[in-house]
Amino acid sequence: MDYAWQGSLGAALVETDLEKLPALVATAEKAIVSRAQELAKSNNGRAETDALQAAIHQLLVIKTEHLKWPSIFSGGTRG
Image 1 (cartoon, rainbow, N blue to C red):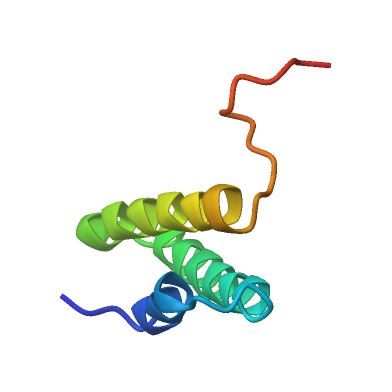
Image 2: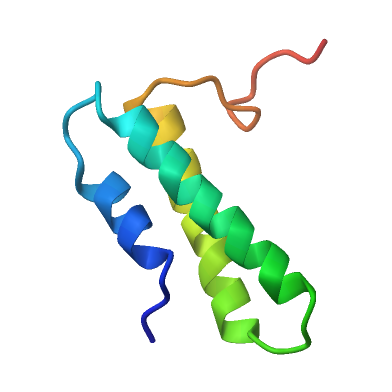
């Protein structure tokens, strides 16, 4: 099934220009969070909720592997 937010996620996933990537990630995050908030108000959408969780993971991979953002999952020291 196709969801409206998947277009912005797809754009971020295929972008190779690291100058453009942060804006695309932010757009995808905004669309995903907005839709997650809508779904939280209903009892429907389990499949889409699962897809949103997978999308969030994909964006985290982009941030940490491509944009070199620090990851709380990288095994670094805790403060």
